[in-house]
Length: 186
Image (cartoon, rainbow, N blue to C red; front, side):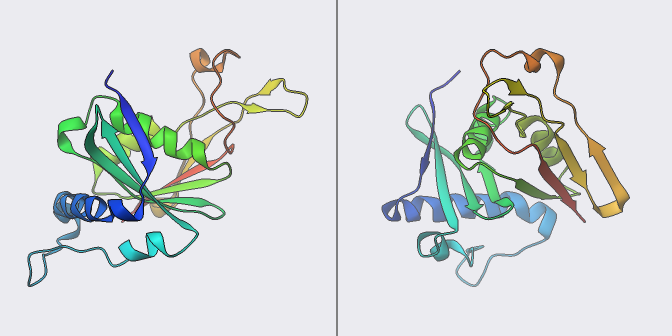
């Protein structure tokens, strides 16, 4: 697999994040029916706040040194994957899953991921990308969470179990919350 790097975006990286947000806006307009403004931009009204508010964190992804995507995260309880984007060139190669899991691993606690019901590709992606890491007891022996993904709209709630092959006590990733919510919004 390619060399994937996930880094917190510095202020000097803001133009890169802004440009990738435009590509994200273009892709997402298929579901939102959004139009560009008078200057040809989709824009993102919260961009500046990712460098001025402590609970907002911007991340950039590189593959072999080239820009490949971003994640915008809001820290809290639960943490929120506010925006997530991988350039089309890098999709369906495991890069998005790796990047998402690296972002999740940076912040222990509960997480939520929201996506639109019409974006079926995102549903498929997030069901594969949401990590189910082991949680360690205070004595250090692994205990396995019963992870769940919630789908509150439409009255649907699902429980996703950790595959048996992933339950071995070797190679456990960092401890994360036992619950990560995936909201599918109408």
